[in-house]
Length: 141
Image (cartoon, rainbow, N blue to C red):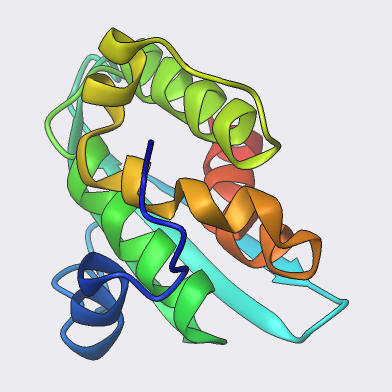
């Protein structure tokens, strides 16, 4: 099981130094996500391969709490280079986890660093923050 501390080293690092928070100009897909309950907002942009099967690049812009921003950066890292179908599957796993479902060891491994956000599932006020980027992705693809 992941740590009981919401503010893990991974979350703090991704919030302080996001690798995927920038303006992507040659995107093929764009979708805005807003969490009206706390004001988190982001614009998620993807560049898909010519056959629209693979996610070549992911970037986001926006503002919000550490949880929403770090979750977006972790998600972007996880899905870059994946097929659209795999990104959907990973998104579904993350949403299940953050809503409190127990994942198998293999599913935890598949989520990689995103699994470190599991403890947020026990903080209902923060769940929507963690889900924002993932739900934005699901709406887009």
